[in-house]
Structures are given as structure tokens and as C-alpha cells.
Length: 327
Ligand code: FAD
Image (cartoon, rainbow, N blue to C red; front, side, top):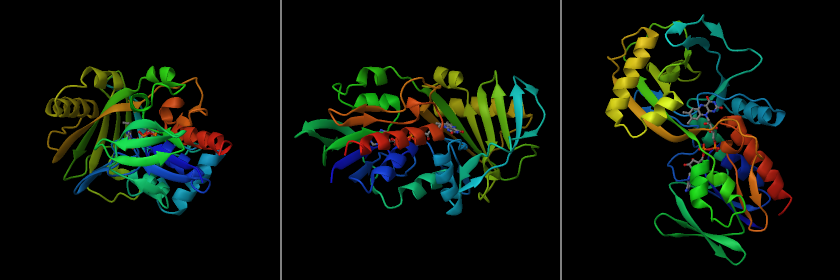
């Protein structure tokens, strides 16, 4: 059997590894302690925050089948939130999400998705792959501790574009294209409260403001936790303040959120921020993955298609089909 290394255990890498698992000997590497990449949850007892992806939708039949299975296993559930749009400080009416376009979340946290999808896979966590070295028609991987992680016939990188460009050898046929892809940063502000907040919606979307999104995280299905708010800063604001210190970012974003919601949020018991350097990418026109059959190297991820969980799934799914034909 061919040996395949998949670097990155987000939705794209997990999808690919699951599809190839019975056809090849697949090893999945991720630098994090957890699994799922940007499908992530941070706990700060008694609070919990999905600080990356907020929800996902499923448009294709094949992804709908995966989501249905996750729901049946209790790892995902539909989230029907009340939503309000703001333009600057002007507030729109409270509305429901389109009933025909279901929004899903992981249960009890977004990271439940990665955990469920990783079941049965050979996953090496806390392993940051740093170099690929050509070895007998394949590739030898080394981690950031200088350890040899083995020789593989195929290597697939399923990390964000910038990290893929840094990791893949420049001989990779698509290296020049990938190097040009730019993902936008995003700050995630996490606020925990001892008392429920008085809000007549669970989600607020903002235009022309420092923040772009606010969700009452604790209102998502299966949470049953102390009141938590998750706020995303706008991408242009995040880019402008990317190197600011955490305290300044927390103070400014807490104030901005409070002003827009008309609530004093300064009494939050828990306040923290996460800096996503590679959060999201605009819709792309190119192929859904990059494959160099001669060198047996490939790359996939949401950044091939657009910044959505389903895009990451589609990229991993399509690449698995292309590699299967070559095994
Ligand atoms: P990732 O999830 O980033 O996975 C890549 C993995 O590679 C990571 O686990 C990382 O640790 C690992 N890695 C990187 N380099 C190395 C290395 N050298 N060695 C080993 N491992 C490595 N999508 C939606 O559909 N709806 C939303 O509401 C939504 N909101 C979002 C909000 C934010 C703030 C962010 C950040 C993203 C959001 N997204 C949303 C996008 C969604 O999260 C992504 O499209 C999707 O999760 C990407 O999956 P992926 O597998 O391509 O990449």
C-alpha cells in the first residue's frame, strides 16, 4: 500500500484522510493539541467559545450526507438563531435565518466536528511538520524538533495558503500560484458573564464597524453553559491592529461591541482574545485543489475555493478522488 502523509487536520485534511484511509496507509499530522483546525472551541471554565468558524451550511448532497451522519452521532445540530443586521449604528429588524438553508454547529462545541471525523484515523497531534526532503521517489518529513517522521509516497498539505507555501518545496509545480494567495486576519473576542444579557437576538452582523459579527455562543444548541459572547472584528480592522497588544485589542473591541449593542459589557467576568492570522479568504476562481502527480505532492484547503467549512470539505473531497485515480 502507498503511504500518504496529510499535513493539517482541519475539515479539508480530515475529509481527504477519511476518503483515502482504506486505499492507502494514511498518517495525519497536526501541530495543535486538538483536531479540526479553525472548527475550534476554547474553554475557560465555566465559559466556552467557538472562536473560529461560527456555523456551517451544507449545499452539496455529498456534504449533506456527512452532516446528517454527524447529527445522527450527536456531534452536530441545527442552529436556528434570531439575527439582526447593523449598518454602522443603525439597527435592522430581528429576523430568522432562511429555513431552507439550515445552519449547523458542532455539539457541545465546534471542535466536536473534528473529533468525530478523526475517529479511526492515524493522527499525530502536536507535530509541526517543518521540512520535506526528497527520498527515493517519495518524501521524508521532519518536524520542528528535527525528528524524522518517516518516508511517504505522497504528501498532501492541508494547511492555510501561507503555511502551505512556506512548507512545500519550491519544486512543487503550483508553488508560485499558492505563494500569491492571501488570507485575511481576524480577531476573536471572548466575553463571559455571570448573568444573562438582555438581548432579543442571538446573532448580530455588522457593516461599517470595527466588528463584523457577534453571537451569543451559549445560546447554540447543546451548550448549557454560562453566558458567553463571541465577537469577530472586521477583517480590515484586524489587519490594521494585527500587532497591537492583547489588552488594547480587548478594551477597544469590548467598548465597540457594547456601544453597538447598547449594553455595558465592561463587567464581563472573562475577557480574552484570539488572533487568527489566516482566518478567511475571498471566493477564488482557480481549481479546488493543487496536484503535482510527477512529484506526488498536493495541497488542499478552503483557500482553494473560498472561506467556508463546506469549501474545505469540497477541496479535500475532490483531491481524494484525484489521488485515488493515481494509486
Ligand atoms: P484549517 O481548519 O485551518 O486546518 C488546517 C490545519 O493545519 C490546522 O489544524 C493547523 O494546525 C494545521 N497546520 C498548519 N501548518 C501545519 C504544519 N506545518 N504542521 C502540522 N499541522 C499544520 N466558515 C464557515 O463555513 N462559516 C463560518 O461562520 C465561518 N466563520 C469563520 C470565522 C473565523 C474567525 C475563521 C478563522 C474562520 C471561519 N470560517 C467559517 C472558515 C472555516 O473555519 C474554514 O473555511 C475551514 O474550517 C477551513 O478548514 P481547512 O481544513 O481548510 O483549514
